[in-house]
Length: 324
Image (cartoon, rainbow, N blue to C red; front, side, top):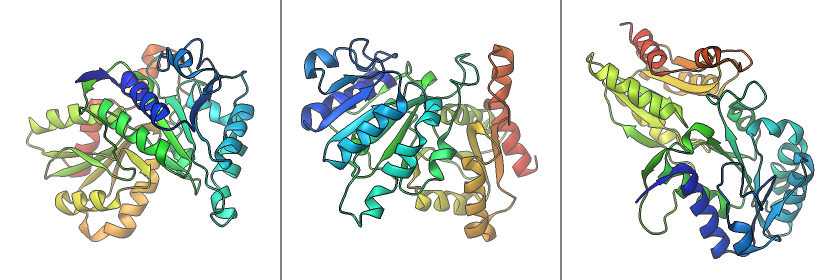
């Protein structure tokens, strides 16, 4: 069955709300409007205002409420209208949700999902276009998921909702309308499992979210020039599937990390360091990095398109790593 990524996310939410009455969704415009991307349209009519909760424009307030509900055994799915808005609710996420299970010796579980659209490309300017996954991966206690396909989005979101720890689930806005095949029936994709989207033998491209498609396009261009690239979709940044990552690098002996977020302090920096520390003897060349520029995301279409990586940038990054 072919459905859009946004529809797949909606299906996951719907199925989990039907399955478990403790699951509820909360955020701005979630009820009457059905989310700004129409993902929860009709949910309020079916599940009622107690489980599809419209909130004031107060991310810190409703995020804190959801953390408290999770402490009491509910399974909230919080939506921030954009991931940029995490900046106004850092405390309930990073000091409370991420730490309470540890600080109570496991007496309190925090089964909560924080959903948010992320990414550039829609001309939304600097306050609505960021990729902030690096910020979340830095905080112990948070799991971080960045799906690329409709099938992955559905299976991973269902796994996140059933998880007893807080999960930050980031969805690229420009993937919502992408229509793809998903499996029939119910399925779960475990957190912490990467997916090799394209096998290859010459170089490993590690990436996630929208950049997966750019990497696949770049791999086709490289193939025409005799370079066989393996594209690994990490899917989950925390926990990281190090087994799949290391197996790919041991095969190709070259690696390029691709991310839309800014290069300075990015996820690619951490991956590069970890690969260099643990797999140095497997590398034929230093780890390559292709990432967004260290600038505020511009509103100008021309400038915005120049700010984040495109397939040609990935091709150039791979060739640089291979010395071609």
